[in-house]
Length: 314
Image (tube, rainbow, N blue to C red; front, side, top):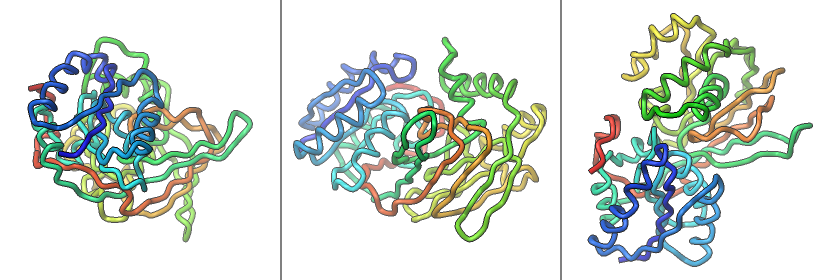
């Protein structure tokens, strides 16, 4: 059995993940997986631990936490040849759905033991240096959300006492109370369009926000990113259509445009908030440059289709 670096975020899911640390350690021991543990405390710890594991020759690195930790660790492993695995313990766990890793901790650890893998794509997103700070550049595994999605994460970080889909719904309500969308320029390389956008979502996976199947036809290994543009619409219209997004049935709405791309630049005259793999972009910026990195990372996959159901830890 190959050595595995386990990077664990005890703060995931509002701190609930900490209560599962001993269970995860026991399951690794019971399945005979030689494992070295690293705990994270602040954003960036996951990336640093993953790079250190690569430098020490670990063939497999497993992230136990939410989408933020998964994105950090997986992004650090892109191009290294190290295999990525995950145990979903977060509030949304959207990336896990694309890897068919279900809600059961036991099954997630079993997937690490079985080590069935798939080579997937990654995205790259960057913002140039501006008067407020230096260039920002990072990989993403699941999604980049510009506009409403960024405002939702701003609100989510202020809310206490809610979890899972209820947390994202309440954060969305709060975000819509002040954010009405803005005019953006979308440059696809061959053409440019101006768009009155509430949301610009670029995805590698299908799902965001703990259950919104925003790009239901997206595949993580097709060499293409998927795009969902949502036009400005009223608060009432937005929530009337939300149930359709849970089932991926929003594609024919007149306020929604879906597409596919390999590169995109998004610009606005007003700095925009954004989220990348569920984590807030470091600052509001006027420009995002997005591209695809094909066949970027070998990932452990499960055989579970229950990833879109609410968590029942077991």
